[in-house]
Image (cartoon, rainbow, N blue to C red; front, side, top):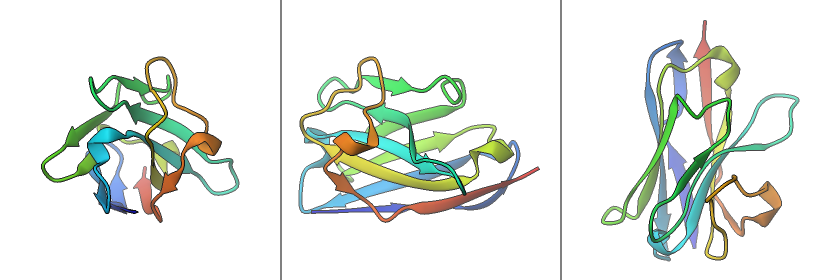
Length: 126
């Protein structure tokens, strides 16, 4: 069971980017997948989540108009598209998955996810 994030890097404010979370060893479509981020000196926080099955999404208020989460079950991958990124979006972004979670009205707490990737760093310049 492995999750691998990619797509991070240095971007300018307003320049969109897409992060990928590719799974191996299990069917990611059977899992809820969350994106969580950890900024320097701050706690890791959940920002977006997508449920398995009907694909219900949830985004926290600070990103809900700018972040989109989607699945490609053929590629066994979940994506996080960040539109109009801001310097405050600078963080290391992690994807996490769990078969028992749902994302209908909240991003589950980081302690609830069973599988994690290694993270990808995003830096947004002003």
